[in-house]
Image 1 (cartoon, rainbow, N blue to C red):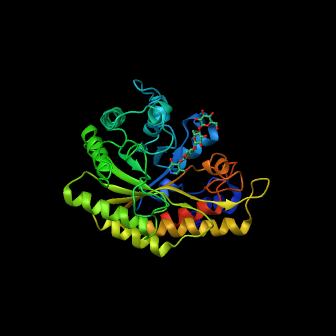
Image 2: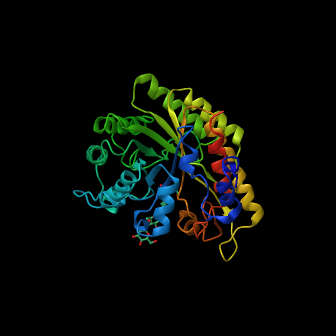
Image 3: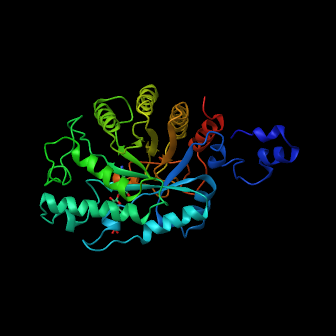
Length: 357
Ligand code: G3I
């Protein structure tokens, strides 16, 4: 831990040397103040009643995003009914602690309710359903959610550069199958109508570096900007596996997107580690993980248009990773399962203290 306070006061020195509590001398949100970067995390409102969860969250972050609470299966469980109870809890927590909120996500191919995926709707019906969904959800949070992941993961993994086949695009699609990314454009226009002041993002996985997928997104964003389609940003998820991050390529990618006049948010960062049967990583891997967090933060901070860094959860106690990797991967976040700050936390805070260069 850096102990800059040593130069200011003996009392502070005693604290830093361990005579005080183990609470770090500057939180992430305090460290980010100088650069104006938003520092955020995905949250699960069911955990707000856990004291350590809530206090760590309130102390460290100034940006929240519901991990699952605004996905279709939660917020639109029946054709004619919306359930904003979980999303409202997130917005309320954020409001009480002076935080901004990102919304995730209006259009995705996963976590959709059966009534939607198995409804055998026509294209015209699906368009009506999607427009109503977007306008109702964005409208409900008008003025409260400052940025939305309007469309998430629309590009394909197996055929890089092409759009994924989904109900939105062509099963049955919303009347625009075979017409490129037109459905995405319609979603951005609907969201903009519902809240003209919200920042509208396209969010994607595995497009952090310059590659065929990010090339295709770049072409779409360029086209949207040239034609006045209301897009304000690109979300780079940043789920890092195998302790490998090509930071130079990530930085070049951020540079080219921000040069288009859109913001970049790092939206879902975590750095997966191999874990043993007790779900513990090695000390060496924890340090390598810290280096990656620090390097990615520095890369973001080096571009004025990179405006937010968000992690996908903050404590290893609650992370999508374990259940999605049969518990072989984990320990991907900033705090361990007992809410102790990890080396990754300190590396990230050091980068935030360093600020924009
Ligand atoms: O809703 C059921 C609940 O009824 C049941 O009791 C429970 C039992 O396990 O499962 C619940 O569903 C889970 C759901 O999250 C809500 O908690 C699913 O099993 C689980 O698979 C689902 O995982 C989410 C995953 O998206 C789905 O693909 C993760 O929490 C969430 O972190 C993850 O987030 C995605 C981003 O949205 C987009 N980018 C990738 C990222 C990681 O996969």
